Image 1 (cartoon, rainbow, N blue to C red):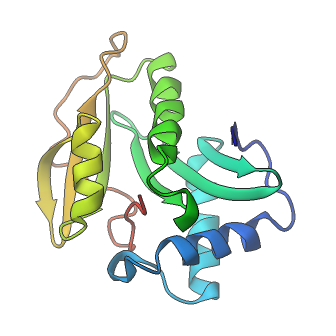
Image 2 (tube, rainbow, N blue to C red; image 1 turned 120 degrees about the horizontal axis):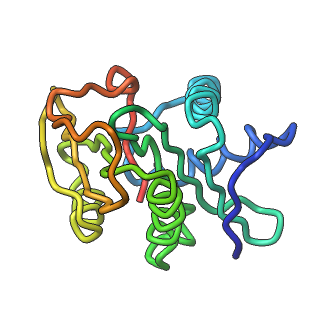
Length: 175
């Protein structure tokens, strides 16, 4: 298994990621986009907002996981982590997060945030293990943040009131 940062999507990649997304969310349907059309629109949205901050885990020619983040100021946000059912419980989510967090540290960010469903307890446990803490609640979503302890950036304001561009969308992590 290898993890590569996406530079340019291949023609059939959207279809393959949609299949991966559907399979990963079968056991967590509350926070999933439903229907191939909606899933593909959501994936296009992720790819557009990630602007290269999108990692895919490959087993041979098959995508088995991905992570998308958006470099927002002052705090970037992880928008999605998806892992194939047969790869769940094998530390792939951690490996994807390591790549994304190392990337953000290199760029000098002080912290990272994400939104997770308030009833997605499995994902919340995962994020807590990685050092994320709940900082806000909006509707059925919890905002979690993690310090990166990177070199200082110009802004270190609190992001408690920050609102994700994806907040109105159904966005959660499929870890």
